[in-house]
Image (cartoon, rainbow over the protein chains, first blue to last red):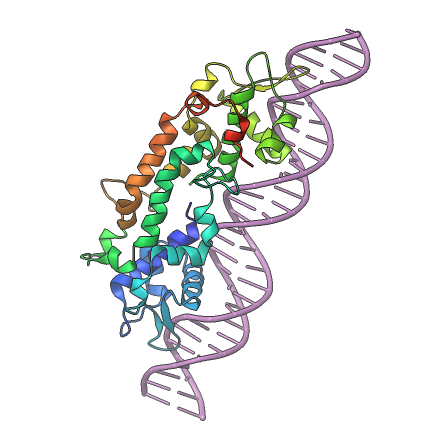
Length: 143
Length: 143
DNA sequence: CATAAAAAGGATAAAAATGTCTTTTAATCT
DNA sequence: AGATTAAAAGACATTTTTATCCTTTTTATG
């Protein structure tokens, strides 16, 4: 449902949400170990998000990645869409092309409700929602 | 969440559930077009299921794959476990190793409920449940 | 202005998933 | 018994995903 890349990206953004702002930019070097993602790979993903204006970044000394106030209003789906593409997330559980609620396959009926909810969570949850009331990194990355 | 292979396998088994029994075995050749899965690949998947006694088969003339009465009591999870392995399905949404309901990451709390339901559907739904009252292939494979 | 810091970008590599082909084995039918 | 049929098995090919490396560009700072 979610690729590893999307998971990685979400973890990276969560770390930024907790630790960064315009005045405190963060280098990939300081993130990757906490979220257990290979350094170069995480860099690629964050660059991709930055290029699509899901997160922010500046180069050079004192540079790094960070989340602006606007960035924090992005939803999880914004991240997933950038990394995986919307199609992948929303595709039919059985992979039947034009399958939807109007013309459902059996499995779709069974699990469709759950999957729809999952997608709704992605679409309706902003980064800000996620970190609300949480100041401890441990709460996000228990290991 | 489910690999393509698992989806393919489920589709193949559904076809068998509708059209086969001990006296009417079916060759891969007669299935693959209906369920839109490459012939050789579907063969492999069904062979794997047969090897694990999730479905039945015999070789030679009049041979083919079929579902015994026992086979029909298998759950979707039996299929998915054989093809993908249980780990893959049940893994944390964010891929955090030891993440579970007792020690959850943020996302887990959010989508955990939905995912748990999805897994329960897989575990509690038998092939028999799925085809109950359905005789039309179209209901399963609309395209 | 020189230097160093950090993201951006591109090329490449490794691994996993997906897909194909050929040979072997077992069952059936003449 | 011999010929034919169909799954079983395993080797091989392709594609996608995941991951690394190296160079270039941008930017802050002394």
